[in-house]
Image 1 (cartoon, one colour):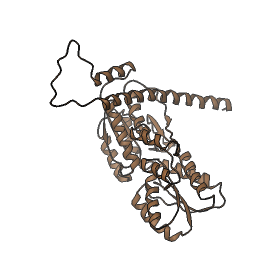
Image 2: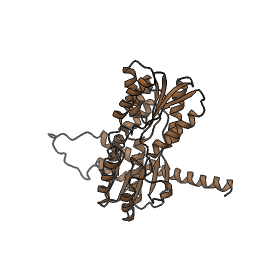
Image 3: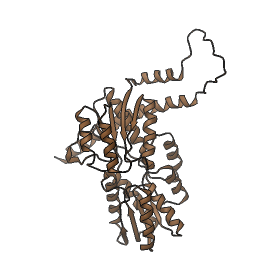
Image 4: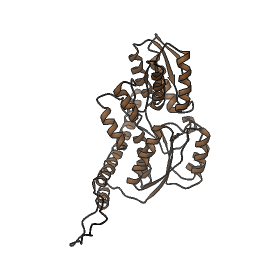
Amino acid sequence: MSDATDDQGREQVELTRRSWLGKMSALSLLALGAGALEACTPAPQADAPAAKPAGAAAPTVAAAAAAAAGALGVGGKPLKAAFSNAGLGATWCAQGKEAAEQWGKWFNVDITWFDGGLSVDKQRKAIEDMAASRWDFVAIQPFGIGTLVDPVKRMIDAGIPVIQMDTRIAPPEANLPVLTFLEPDNVYMGSVSTEAMIQAIGGQGAIIMTQGAAGHTGAQGRAQGFKNIVAKYPDIKVVAEDFADWDVNKVAKLWEDYLVKYPNVKGAFFHNDDMALAASKIARNSGREIRMSGVDAMPPAVEAVANGSLVASVRNPSSRIHWGAVLIGWMYANGEKNVPDYILMDGPVVTQKNAGGLLFEQKHYMI
C-alpha cells in the first residue's frame, strides 16, 4: 500500500472518529442541559396549595427536556444494559460507575453493575452471571486480557452488542467482534507522567515503576511508555518494576520493603494514582522525599499535584469512557449502525492552569 493510500486511510478513520465525537458531544450537551434544568428546579413544598391551571398547563422540566430531546432526535424505548469494570475498589472504576449510572438516568438506560472485584476469578464469575441474562447492550473493562472471552462470545453470538472499555477483552488476533473499543492512549499517558518525574529528579538516579495488573493492556501500554522515556536517559537506573494489581495494600507492602532495600531511590512512576498516593504517604511517614507520578488524574491526585505531593498525573477519562459506552449503546439500540470499531478517549496532563477545570468536569461526570 502506498504512503498516499495510508494517509487517506488515516484521514478517513479520523473523520469517522470526529463525526462520532461530534454526535456524542451533541448528546452530551443535551443530557447536561436536562440535568441542569432538573438541578435548578426547586422542589415542591409539601404544604403548598396546588395551583389551579388557567387554560393550558405550564410545561414541566421533564416535558421541556423531552421537547429538547425530540428536537435533536433523541428518543427510543427504555433500555437495559450491563456494565463491569476491573473493580470498584479502584477509584477510577468507582467514578466510572457513577458516571455511567448518571448518564443512564438521563438517557433512560437501566444499568445493572457486575463488579470485577480487582480479581480475574471474581470478574469471570460476574461476567458468567451477566451472560445468563438478556441485555440491550453491555460494556466491559476486563481485569485481564483473555480471561472473559467465552462468556463475552456467548453474549455476542446471542446478538448482544458488547463495548470494551479502556483495555482489551481479547488480543487483536482473536478477532472478537465487539461493537467498539473506547481506549485512552496508554503509551502516551505512561510517557508524559514518567518524563515529568524524571525531569523532577534531574534526569539521573534510581527509580521504580509500580505496575497495575500484568494482563491489563492499559498497564502494558503504560509500562511501554515508561520504558520509552527511560531509554532516553542513560543516567537513570530502574531498580524495581513489580506488579501491584491496582491494590493499595499490595503497594504498601512493596514500598515498605523498597524503602529498606533501596535507600537511594529518587523517583517512581505508578500505573494509577491510587497506588502513587499510597506509596507517597508511606515515603513521607518514613521521612523520605521521593518524586512520584501517576495516571488517572482523579480529584485527590489533582490536588496532590497542586500541593506538590505528586509531581504529575495525566487524565485517563473515566467518566468520558463510561458515559461514552452508555451513549454508543443507546445510539446503536436506536438505529445507529455505523459505529467505528475504535474511538480514542483522550485526556490532558494535569497542570496548575487546568486543575480547577478538571475537577469541575469530573464533578459533573464530563471527563
